[in-house]
Length: 299
Length: 166
Image (cartoon, each protein chain N blue to C red):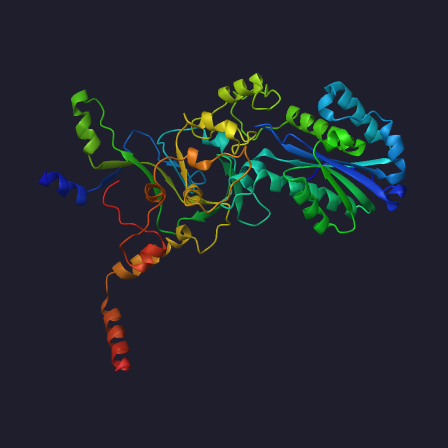
């Protein structure tokens, strides 16, 4: 959780403040998802509108970088980011009790609000680009922080300057994180031409194709839980998990649309699976059953 | 047919130490991992380049990732005087290709490597003493108590205990 922090608590932070929250890298199949926020005194709002912030997607990379440097230098603006590692995204979405991407996103936004409040900033209004249903999301945030007025909207990043600013913070941080990504894997044939990370990007597609591994799948930069990965998994060595079996029994609810449906990856009936995954000690005395110790007559 | 059934239920295992000249059995302690999944593959792979266990703030617990899943593991020593062994079918050198089938069915195994500890991994959950895997080691001490030859002293003390119960 978290990385860089804006400057120490400025004087204006004790006056009513507004904040915008936006995300970058929700769709890509690789790299971190970044939540960014930008805040300032309510009275600074007018000046903020003159700073040419716009939805980060409509800006060229150079312009985004320039605006980010400007806002960092602006003493009347505070900001913070939460960089969520792709390993964390995969692991949460593939947990035994799966956490979907919307929930991860909400938690990250809530984490940012907590961090800024803990800095001593008097937040009164917070503008959030929605994830999932705006009204449900707004209610969730309002219950959590009763003293703050939340505005949750679709395309908030183009509607509210403070959210546009947050989108620049998030996008620039995400781009830099991917560019400077330190790979965990030490195989010497891993290249860095990841592309944008979006599933449709030909450079990303080529990178995925060239970096699949029969046993390990992909380097951990890749979000294994993304549906984009499914076609690549077909040719890999099959891996059966206990939690997939539970999934087939229908214990987990429906998840985000991009989330990989696990039953597509595993094959065959659940009965066969559990027997293949581990020994059971079936038919033996309790001592052995509890320890899953089977008698072996041949290897 | 009858014969085949016989061999399936009563397999004799001849275990031998690799006899290549000057070769020492490799010690793979610290490199043996028990994963909470079934990987449908047998053979070498670039494990050390892709599988990177890291220590966690909790003592004795390591964290790693495999195919996007978060694994939590701990390293268990194999109790003295036991050892772990990696065994493989004994390879017979310089034989005709027609003998291959015979080789497959042979019950001669040889030790390829040995280890004194192994790391077992749980998906999402912290390893604990309640895990079936760590509890399976109980069998070693139970087996010892069951199979240790009975001495005259044991018999005396056992019959004394029985008498007391009457």
